[in-house]
Image 1 (spheres, rainbow, N blue to C red):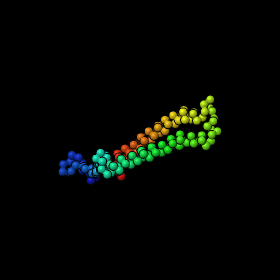
Image 2 (image 1 turned 90 degrees about the vertical axis):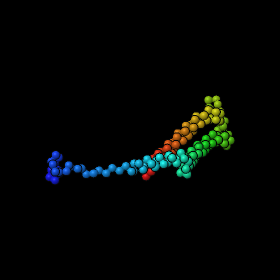
Image 3 (image 1 turned 30 degrees about the vertical axis):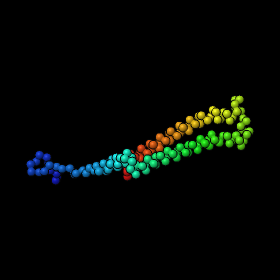
Image 4 (image 1 turned 120 degrees about the vertical axis):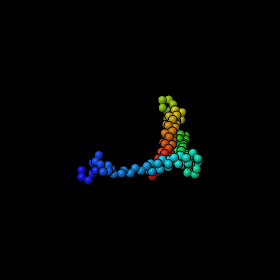
Length: 137
C-alpha cells in the first residue's frame, strides 16, 4: 500500500492504528450514584428517609385499599341481609345463606385478599429496590 510503512524496513516508523478512545467515567459515575443512594439509605440521610417514607406510604395505601375491600365485602353482607331480609332466608343445601357466606365463603375470600396483599407488597418492595439500584439518568 502506498504511503503505509512496511514492517521491517529500516528508517521507517512502524504502522500505527488510529487511537480508540475508551471512556469509563459514565460507568463509574452510575455505580457511584447507586452506591451513594444505598449509603443514604444506610446512613438515614434526608434523601434516604424520603425514599423509605415513599415505600412506607405505598405499603400503607395498599393496606388501606385491601382493608376497604374486606370491609365492603364482609361488612356489607349484614347490611344486605338487613335491607333485604328475603335474601337472608334463602337456604342452600339446607344451610341458611348468611351462615354459608359468613362461615364458609369468607375464609377463601380472606385468603385471596391476603395472597393479593403479599403479592402487591412484594411488588412495591421490588419497585423500591429497582429504584435504589438503577443508575440515575
